[in-house]
Length: 230
Image (cartoon, rainbow, N blue to C red; front, side):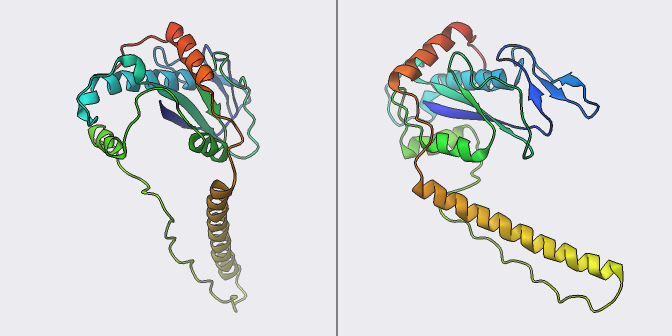
């Protein structure tokens, strides 16, 4: 089982149910419907339909990336839909805690989502080797954005000395330089903190058991149309 994550950046609170349109709070205080497209009635169903389309593609094109000649049935190519909603701190969305079918899930910050991904231990579906994953990335024309390991951060900018002039412009410029350096230090500290947390902490949400995963896919099979293409 693979995980497909639909990433949305939402600047305002949203509300809605699992089925039906979701709404976003406008700057005037009114609720406006988020754009939808066919069966993608809301971001959750967009993730579900995308995962379903990817599962169909993985089965139909298995000979493009798998190293073995045996043809596996479509039921063994499963994709789990995640929805990652990133919003400014303090934003509260009016959504259910999770889909009642337990098929897929939404997250509101990268820390919880990363722990979920790192703790994912699928017990069903086709298992892919490292080479098959590389073949799959090439077949899908994906671009690698991180190869693993530590990240080499560029050096911090130097702070100029306190302005000797008495003008407001020079003082504002010095403050801006100081603010940039502090922001960079905070980002670097957050990166190291996240790296250490990933190494030391166990996931705080248990991955679904074999029975839970099977039940979720079985329930979803009755509700989700198939036949999409990438």
